[in-house]
Length: 130
Image (cartoon, rainbow, N blue to C red; front, side):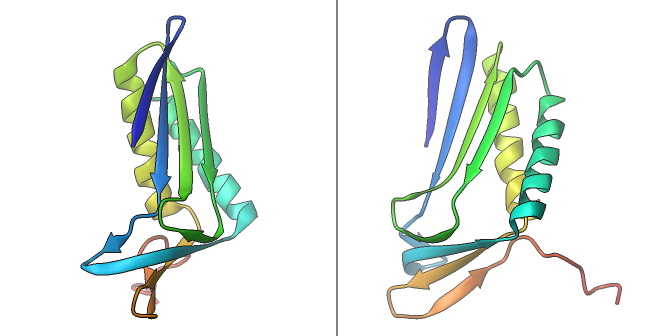
């Protein structure tokens, strides 16, 4: 969900990513996130710096959970503030989409039937050119 608050003359966008109860026709009970902390921090800083180029931003902050989370728990929070809402929305969207494909954060889904599956996302290397 996305929450919009007006603070003085600034636009603040908060994005909360939560664990869904379904994916690809399967009932999800939980997610497990694993990450490489130092590299994740570096990549998230890079993504935020790129997003700042989209407008006059005062602040972009990203928090991401790790470990096992139940359905409904918050997995990611993105905070973007700027003088204009369109820039805030665009930057927020850019950060979450880039995070999904570039950050070394891996997600495993735990299904109702007891099966688990790693969800396609970031890869540390490509095997196409080997």
